[in-house]
Amino acid sequence: MENKKSVYAWAFYDWANSAYATTVMAGFFPLFFKSYFSAEVDATISTAHLGFANSLSSFIIVLLAPLLGAIADAGSIKKRFLFLFSYLAISMSAILSLVGEGNWQLAIFVYVVANIGFMGSNTFYDAMLSSVSNEKNVDFVSGLGFSLGYLGGGILFGVNVWMLQDFAFFGFANEAAAVKASFVSVAIWWALFSLPLLLFVDEKKKKRELKVSLLKQGYSRLKSTFGKISQLKGLLLFLVAYWLYIDGVDTVILMAVDYGMALGFDTNDLILALLIVQFVGFPATLLFARFAQIWDTKKAILLAIGLYLFIITWAFFMKEKHEFYMLAVMIALVQGGVQALSRSYYSKMIPRQHAAEFFGFYNFLGKFATILGPLLVAVVALFSESSRVAIGSVSIFFIVGGALLFFVDEKKVANDVQTALE
Image 1 (cartoon, rainbow, N blue to C red):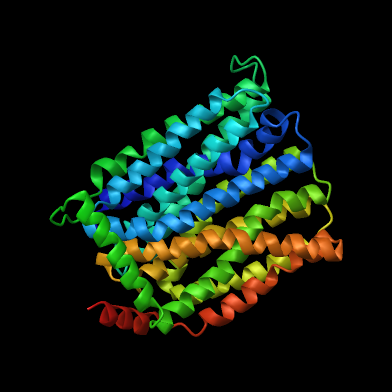
Image 2 (image 1 turned 120 degrees about the vertical axis):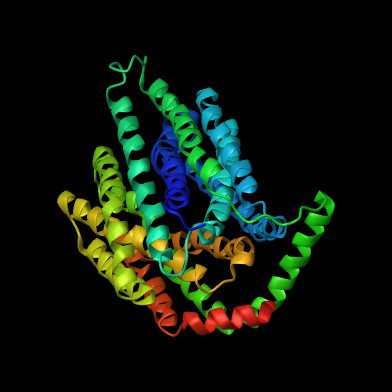
């Protein structure tokens, strides 16, 4: 399917689920966890709890994504899996509003399950890109999804910040009540705006098999892919390059607010910076996708990697608050573009009938990218005793990842993959 209705219905799912990424994951849960759910816990311990929760949910998805992708491809049920995971996360987001003060254990459990639902659904959402696009428009379609995600997530996050800062106006007794209502608003927003994908995006159906047989087929295909992928040197080269440079991107996303706090910037400034990223990222991602269509996808990714090296250099030397805002703008200009184009570039190299299976590996590497980068920053900060040196160390991911990407030939890779799977 490549008609406009299916394209926009698919892309609108990013509008829907990005509300969770902004309001819950990046915004309110980390702050609320420390001040409310872990109110009586030492700050260092609560930070460790939150870090473990993020690592655990990523690790579970690392284990599940390739297998689930193989099963979904075997039965042509990607959309069913997408909604199974998304409604798991939607339910958990609403349930967060019921967790009481000081009950950090339950908060962590609900948050981990919600993250698993969020990340799991994205595996199947990415895999459905090939159902709504072709080789000519895949860059635009992928970029459209990310851009709508920035806009949708930014709009609700902006409303949620307003609810927090002016809670009495909205009829809430205190800030805690406003934050809990924000968790519910995310669930409603996500459920409502995911309906277009449910109604208007189809995937080609294969003959269904019994669940036990389908499970066996999933394991069989997963085992087969593990065996063949080691022989696909071109695809491996891209995946390693992607793992490295996206590690840099994810580290910047995860550590930017912490870095700003280390430099002494106010919490309100950090929240405003997050909003800037959302609203600048909307048009910037679309423009980057259009640019890739006119120029070349790989070259556009390499340009984004080069801009990230400039961003790291800027972050190393910045001192003033306005420089942090400018940093947010620069990140917004390239963050969505490099994510969207990496996804579309990868989709050009893999066969559509194995999309979910291969995107399982793609997301597998993406989740590992949230482990190594922050660890490097932590180790460098520990030994150098400098946040600036620590953030500067992230440049190694962009340098090596970009160098490897330079040698990838997507057309040759696509032919090699197709031949290996025949």
